[in-house]
Length: 170
Image (cartoon, rainbow, N blue to C red; front, side, top):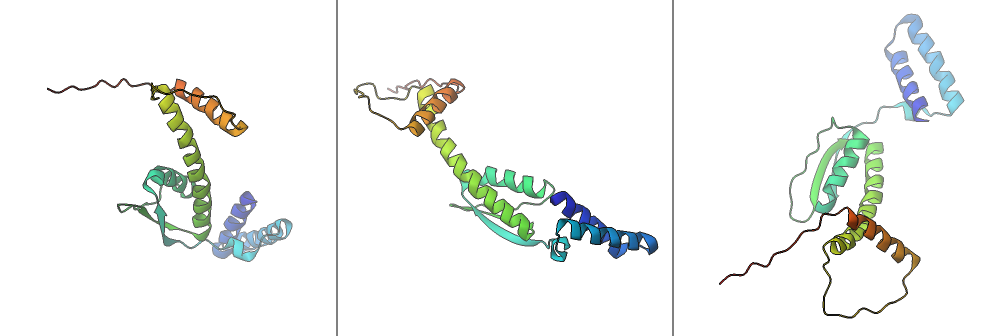
């Protein structure tokens, strides 16, 4: 649908600004396209831009900026004044861009948090950060928990382990 909408917007611009036969031909082509694909006249209006303030947790800021750049293109200015708890990201966007950014960010920030749990397990595993003087008893785990542990194990193989050296002072 978006390629037809883009074509319709271009034809509308030509019908509005063109001259003579070019203008008439564009208008007829636009009318055919609207009827054939069920487009509405309001779909053809250019989205007006306005400043929107997005509240973003600091740990999700990179993901947010990546999504905003993907939706709006890298050409947009993104202003992020620093705050202690949340970042305020101010962007000039259309309503459709705002909705797309918000819905994608909601989805991907939740996915990021899930993957971060797996990464934490993998990091602990890669660096062998387990207590040494405790006994472990086997217990049944769910299929989902087993999948997470397997993923963490695979991920741990790619993590460079670090060796901590105690620093003794006299």
